[in-house]
Image (cartoon, rainbow, N blue to C red; front, side, top):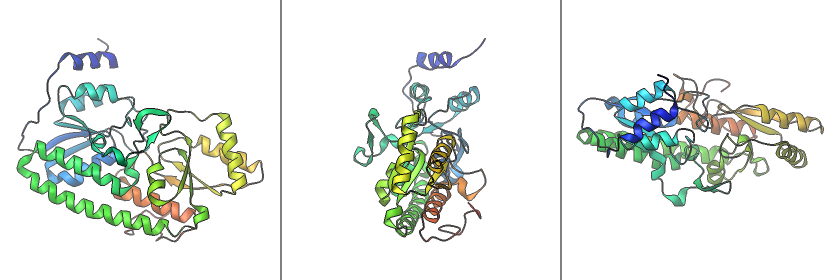
Length: 319
């Protein structure tokens, strides 16, 4: 028999059960959709969790669809943690139906609505890219700690202690961002990227953010959009644009070529981690390392002053 996506959704929908946590004494088996959630869960859960991330380096969560292996992993897990706020657009229906039979929790949905940015193109929805600001990500970390504590109340104290350590690192990262990004000349504080993933970043640190595509990579940039942005680059003499690890660089290169045709040079300022973290086993494959990399890369490209290897000297050379 061939099992397609609709078949699995039908199976899940047929069993309407209020999910309850099994109070296990062993490590919790957890599936997280994104690397950012997986890393944060590991930091808080410590030895009491086994975590698998569905989406690895370079994977676009806006477009990702669950595989058969993913479905098996999620249905067998003690907890499924996903971002929410319509980040996992292609998986949302499945994840919501999964929640009827087992704990499947959108951890960013718990954020206070006054902290979220709405978007004119997505009525009733919010920009999901809250991880771009450490101070905001702290709210998600707190929700993860709450969920873990509900599942394992016997080790709630350990989760709380681990959360406190992680939040202290988030505060240090926030301070590093504020200090380093302020060294960029005000006239150069323009962040041009492949898609609109940096609005929270821009609001928090005083940068103008221009995304070629919208907040979802599923939206396409037309020729008129590219042409308008080329004219803006030339007129405002913007000299740097940034590619993203999880988004094609096609549109960025079209901008650079268009500006060159008007005798204006635009350089690639570096590669940023927008929707996915760095390669496994590296500092950039942690939440702290991911954001450290972005901050350091942006400051270096736009003429500010920052340590070559980032906040803790852990960034890869040439990162």
